Length: 258
Ligand SMILES: [Zn+2]
Image 1 (cartoon, rainbow, N blue to C red):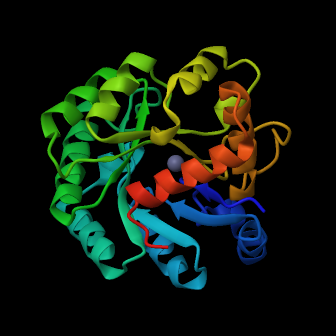
Image 2 (image 1 turned 45 degrees about the horizontal axis):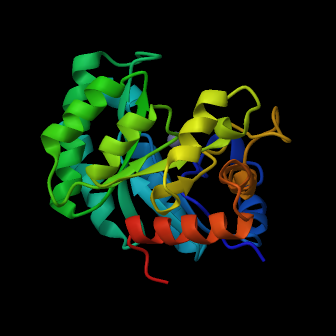
């Protein structure tokens, strides 16, 4: 029996509205734990509301870089309140920088990234980072914010091995999603191969980034197994080893007590 841990899946997403409960019940047959990150106050509330319904479901609350143009201090306060409202809120996220879509201006994204890092440190929670085409600024903010309290996860990692090494020194785990399974991702596969297994996480980013052989379908946390299989193939180790170690890593960074 696989004991998978999907470290990142947006299970509140409206794409699951028609069958969320049956989807999740099915998922929890093969997956032990799912962490659901949020994008804004509304989805943070939705995440927290789902937590009591499934033993293996944990959550993160936060404001995604896309949403920072609408962020306010009241919203940040509400994120803090939600984080404190339930022990199953295990991180602040997803937060970070997105210079690919630029749905929010760069300077605004940076301000809210830092404010939320400070909140996470205050609450002693790890952060879940979204970094798209913003490696330089993401890294310099993390370096500036470095402290014994700063730690977290680089979600759906897309940077270099060199940057990953620096991030690991700062207390970060490197998480891989569906793109590592895509046949064309040769560079990403090399990066995944180089990350030590004790710092590596697996995720789906459901309902997005569906890995083969299910591309084109809606993603769900049970497909994290295809990410585990690809990591095992790349590292030439057993799938069981990947599943067990990534599970231990995720339990550790999210401080989930078994
Ligand atoms: Zn996400």
